[in-house]
Length: 170
Image 1 (cartoon, rainbow, N blue to C red):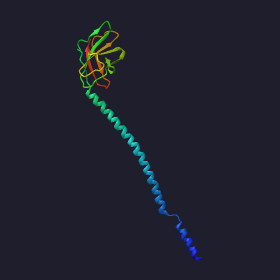
Image 2: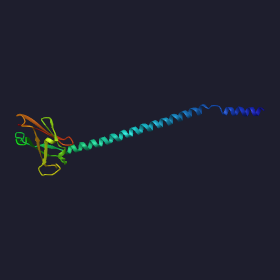
Image 3: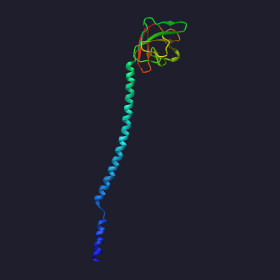
Image 4: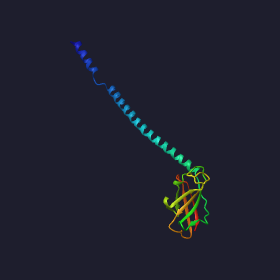
């Protein structure tokens, strides 16, 4: 009977709660949680880095295009042609850069005021549809009447933001 009691005691002590196993399980749970959190952080950072890389690439392409683009208003600032019949001033601009431009995306400001596209007629002297480097662009700006006598400014801007401004007198 004594042997049976000892075996029972040994069994009970072996089934007792083990503090070392409890600590190991706790550490394993914290380790798995840390791995899951780290994976989440890596995923978020990867998306942000990819977005930043894409944005930088696009920005550098635009900057490179702006560097290669140049417009020069070559009209004589002392004598800007004005047609009394059609009420428009004629300006001349030259593509002095290295990129081709689409005339339909050229914007004109007269004395700091945007001239709507329906009041601007753009014609290439070679009758082409692309404003190539070295080509001349004729800009006819329709107005309600002659500008007041004095100093004025015309600002011609390309689609990528590159522009030129010329002061002139009427």
